[in-house]
Image (cartoon, rainbow, N blue to C red; front, side, top):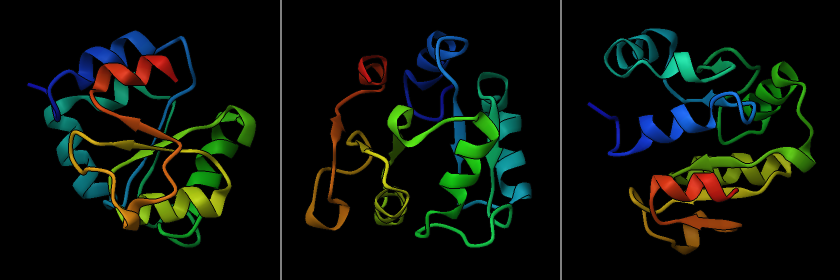
Amino acid sequence: MDYFPGVIEILEKLHGRAKLGIVTSKDQGQFAEDDARFNFSQYVDTIVVAGDAKRNKPFSDPIELAMERLDADRGSTVFVGDTPADSQASKAADVPFALATWTNPVSPELEPVAYALKTPEDLLTL
C-alpha cells in the first residue's frame, strides 16, 4: 500500500541515485505511525519532523536542517510539497519548489512553483 499511488516505487528508484530527505510538519510520533504503515524511512537519508529545527514550516529552518544533514546546497536541492506552508518554506530557503499536483492543483497560494509534478513519476525528471 502506498501513501499515494506510485510513490514507493519512485522512492525505490530514487534511493541511491540522489540524496533524499523528508521534511514534515508531523511530530515524531505522527511520523512514526505513517512510517510503520508505509516504510518511508528505508528510502531516505534524513527525516526532519516538527520540533527538530528551531522553527517549523513555513520557515526555512527544517529545509535548511535537512540540507545540512544531507550535505546538500541550494543549487542541488528541490523541495517537493503540496501545501502553502511547503511553498513558503521553499521560498524562504531559496530552493525551487516542486508542487505535487496529484494532491493540490497549482494556485496563487502555492506560488512560486518551479515544477508542477503531475504524477509521482515526474520526480524522476528533476
